[in-house]
Amino acid sequence: MRGRLWRKSNPALDAATRTALVGDLMDARRAVGAALRAKDKTAEQTARAAVNTAKHALGERGPVWWDDAAPDYTRHMARTTPYADWFAGLS
Image (cartoon, rainbow, N blue to C red; front, side, top):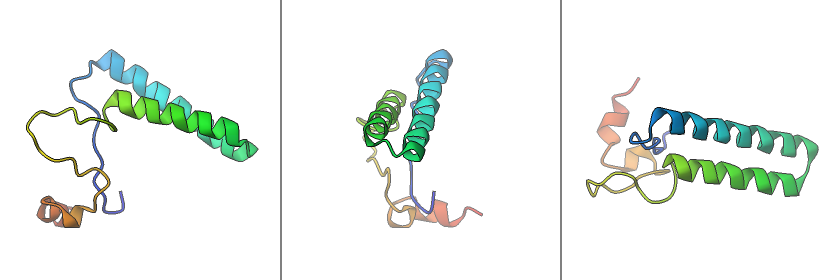
């Protein structure tokens, strides 16, 4: 997204677990939107915490889920990482 690298979900999650966690994430994102529209800071903080919890459970945040010792370039600009050539080749 906008030239940044983002970590994918842990592929070792079974389909049912992943589906449930994605559902939790989407519910939490909808709650963030509702809280923003309602200008409810407390509900927004609660909803954002739920988003964070779901992203950690999916493996998109927190400790890395891979074991090949590759560094985590999440949120880095692709052009400043070893993936720069790959990224430049994308259309």
